[in-house]
Length: 353
Image 1 (cartoon, rainbow, N blue to C red):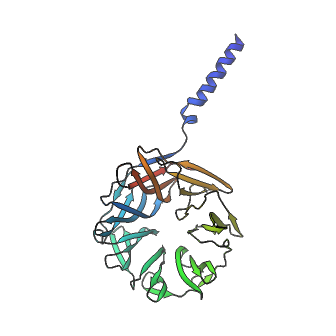
Image 2 (image 1 turned 45 degrees about the vertical axis):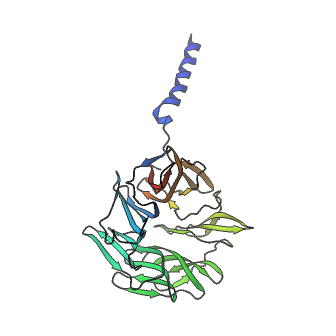
Image 3 (image 1 turned 90 degrees about the horizontal axis):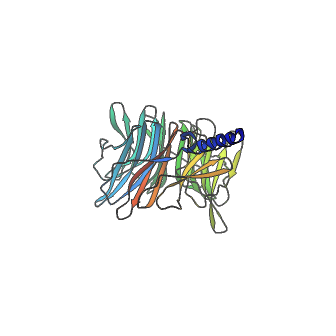
């Protein structure tokens, strides 16, 4: 009898382990509704969050008469479209989103093709015009006390610097042909990646001049993004070309040395790479399931994957941008349901630790 009781008790414990909510519920991605757009197609450019209740997603609609700027805001509960900014109803597009103190700064290309910075404070929106119009605007970065816009005009590459009151043009080292992107930690610590006469290189602004940072990038590689964190940690990611094949690399500075890793991501574009609340690197990757998105988590030498929620009749779920929002991750992108045009989508992974 005692033996039978022991068996029954053991079976009960096993069953409880399988069905109890604590054991059965695995944290996962959930879908967040996004108000739809009316244009045939849409492009998402950036997503940034200051905390769990304040995130902004930018981009543009491909309307019949050209591009139209698009801006969405997350308040911690729902996404809503913002149409209150200057030029919201005019042709143009929105680019990178930055948080500068208590303000939101967003790069805008307006109806005349001129660039400007939208600034949103407690008093509403204002505009900082660029001193000149460029052929293309490649990237934008802003921190308290400084902002940069990189691009090209008819005389070549341009690095425009704003100190809070005026714009100046900064020179770059000889041999730099094109500045592809820029990121900043402080007003005296900014990084850029550039095409040079000897290949891809990393430049660094020290408050006085741009210099070659002499970062040991992998041979035959390019750069997709640079993550500058509050500590001295710096992460660079991109694609390396070897014997006709492409592979992703991650190059990390820990305050003492550079370390290179090659996670199993194929030729994934890593522009959306972010540092998650758990300390790992996260990015959206090409999914092997048409009805679900897919995300990679890079923690040291270990790479794991997770999927977004199943979406009925979806034929392409494509998160484009990713950001940390408090203890969660937010993604923003597009989803195409069979028989309809691609529309906006968002997903959240909550309480990561």
